[in-house]
Structure formats: structure tokens, C-alpha cells
Image (cartoon, rainbow, N blue to C red; front, side, top):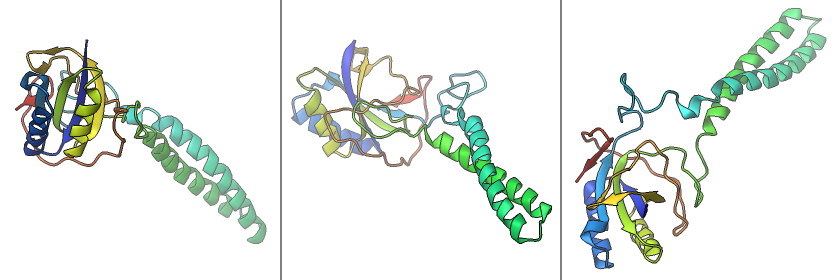
Length: 209
């Protein structure tokens, strides 16, 4: 297995500029690979399309909806009880309050649960998902890892990651576009920006440049 440092860029020109800076820093041409990673869901892992059998971010939505409905249902019941006391004992007000509370709770609970998939941007931790963009990958050693990560960051690279993989003939041959990046501890982590642009893709979900 080889040690690899990579970062995402918004365009090929930005990634190429990073390659030039890496050359200047002493990295060899065969140790740098630049390719495009398609958006999530466009890697054709299944016959009918898609990357995974289920959306990882939605797996907890059902439990979150139930928990949220139960919590706000109780709140609604309390509010409804107060209304019932001060509205001449209106049973209809109690029913409405509980129903509205449960409905809002189910929506809120589902949103909170699905947001748990957005991991904290901390070194050594996964970002939760791999974003589309132009990836510049560098085959490094323990001694050159920090230098490569720093160059990528200084050139505007996002989600600077550290990975183990097979590197052959200037290519990260077992790159997995579905596996989320694990952020490098050699640079300060920061939330990723969006990516614009489009490109075709091959069976791996990546286009080399």
C-alpha cells in the first residue's frame, strides 16, 4: 500500500497550478495524478444507477422523525392542556395542539437525524461524503507528506485528505469515489466549498487529465 495525499479543486487549471507547485517542491511527474470525480450518485455502482443501496444520510431519518414527533407531541400536549384550561375546556384545542406538535416534531426530528451525516471537519476524521470536483492526488512518503499537503492547501485545495492505496504508473489505481475522504492532520481542516462544472466519467467515476 502507498501513502497518498489528495485535495479537491474547482477546475483543472487550478489543479494544474498545484501540480506545477508540486514539481517545484521536488515531487516527480509520476507521483502526481489529476482526475475528475463525479457527483455522488453518478458512479454507476448498481445496474439501475447510483452508488449505494441506501442514502447514508437518510438512514436515521425514520428514527429521528419518530423521536421528534414523540418529543414535540408531548410539548403540544402540554400547550394544549394550557389552552384547554383557559378556553372553556375545549377538547378540540387539545387535539389540534397535540396533532400540530407531532407533525412539526416529525419534520424537525428527521432533519436533525439526517444532518448527523455531515461530519465535523477535523483532522483524522471523515467528511461524511466525497464531493465532486477535480482531485489532485500525490504519491508521498512519511517524510514528504506534510510538504505535499501544504502545497495543495496553499494552491486552494479543499478537503485535503490522507489515504492508503495502490499507486501504479502515476495513477491511484484503486481510488474509490464513494469512500469519504479522511482529512489530513498536516494542514488545518476547513469546511469544503461547492464545485461547479461538468465532465464525462468512466466506470470508476473519475476522468483523468
